[in-house]
Image (cartoon, rainbow, N blue to C red):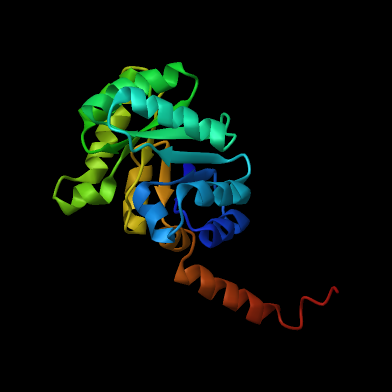
Length: 220
């Protein structure tokens, strides 16, 4: 499974890259707005943190041609290459834009997905990743894990090259259950990432080891 950080906070990104097997960063307008910096400043800062790892930047244009122009602009302004994924919401114009952006040589992550059919249509349009929102579905009693499972099953059944990038997590159990569906990747907040990689029994075990090692680990 591929792990990405769902944050635009560079302190959090540096912390995660230092300690965890992070493959990249996903962003969206809400995450960027939370940092209080314009796109022109925050994206170069993130790139400085992650190097050649993946970065997913969301487009905000409404029609397909403008989405294509926007994706090309980001690629040019930020000097992005194969590590860049244009995040395109699965609106009516978005489906068309997925094909246009992909045909222009830019990777695509289809986002704001809430149903299996939205994901399948995005995959058929050429999306490299499809991003279903797990917790947001759970919040409206729509069973986010099951939707992810259905998407994974459909992509595998029809032999599509698209990968599933599950998003919107609030706890470790959601990540655990998504991993059992065969989901290819997840993008997590800093908080969930920290919780995912730790357990109180691990901490207790290490403390016991350190105590028992006293006076017997004598090689210096």
